Length: 311
Image (cartoon, rainbow, N blue to C red; front, side, top):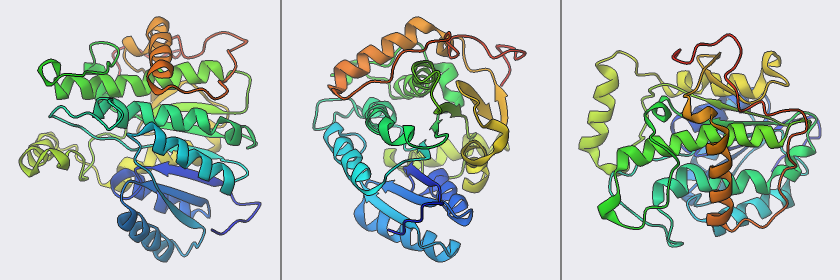
């Protein structure tokens, strides 16, 4: 891996296709040292090589990790700590929708494990490396689907109680709740935490549920003429990772490079605390935790001047 002291380091999960790959390519072209994380070794290596070739940046490397497994995530964090003296940008992008109930080998429902718990453990495990940056940025890729959430995501053990669409919406709410809770705990540090809605993007998302469902998913956006290319979907992610306009800005929710209001549930402090406690218990995370905020709770309010129903 190329290592130049003046080069900013960005780690992106779910970077072998779609928004993650597009963001990785854009940042590589901007001379970032880019670390892509994928689940499949061959695909990760192929994507790494393609980004290197297209960007002309040899400082791109790939790590293999199944983010649905806490043990894999801990292993990834240990490898990153050994290879990187700091992390400047962490983009938690990987995500999936599972219409049928599945449990991981660790007994965690797959949507919860993939869309929230893995990133929760990875982020907390890398806080030490993020604190070594002059101004680290954490970006959580959420979704407008969080507005359809009904409450805190739960570990659902039985297929009988499982609703894949509801669980997905609750997982996206968890992304935003985690953003605000972590921003609150990092208050006073140089690390910022923000969430982004990339919009409807033409990717392989939901392909794991079969091509018919994937096609229906795409057609729902085609009908509304809102389907974006991966590069368009990654635009606000890259903006949050690089722009001086958002330097020092934390606990915000963005779409189309604009700060907008997230759902009322996402701004509920009790739900933020509840998600945090449940995530610690479920993951068994035993590393050092970010200190509590000292000057208020920035994630527990509606951003000034933005209506609660604005999208």
